[in-house]
Length: 222
Image 1 (cartoon, rainbow, N blue to C red):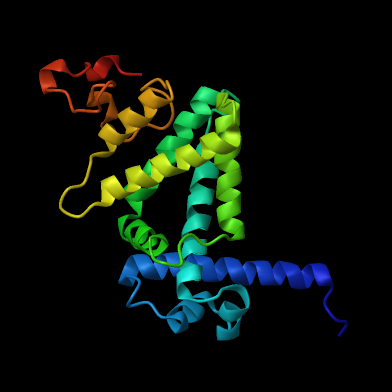
Image 2: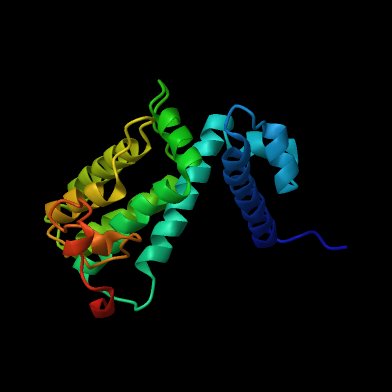
């Protein structure tokens, strides 16, 4: 049997890494971070334990890469949703909605992630984080930012703050209120992007739910 080519070996390593990241997301959401071991992750991924050490410095680094992969994948899906567009306003609205939606759908995972990056070791750079950064940077450039790098950093900070506000135990902020703040800051139309369910019943200026008598007639909604 002839040895595998370098390209085949690289593709296999990439798939193994992807399986580890996906298994991490699944298990942390199912069991929580502390109850998930590296052995659990490698077993779910069908990978050798040594691969974790090869790719990641430890479980925390693996978690951050896994969450950044999820965020980048969901952001890309939001930006590329139909109908496809090159309009910068619409793309930024989709990006904000996509990022806020992750915290709605993956509450346990995102709470764990935010706690992780606030530890002493801080933010871990990885290919998945770099892909996420590139997507957001390209989005603010399409929106018309004078300095896309600085605007990306500000948007990242605002989204992280919104994530903490949404996930704060005992005093969570509604997604609609946070969306309204972000949309106003960037001059985005409330109907743009991928509005969360119920957004049509909110005041676009504040994100506060309107009383039933003030809500648009459902028959007249697009």
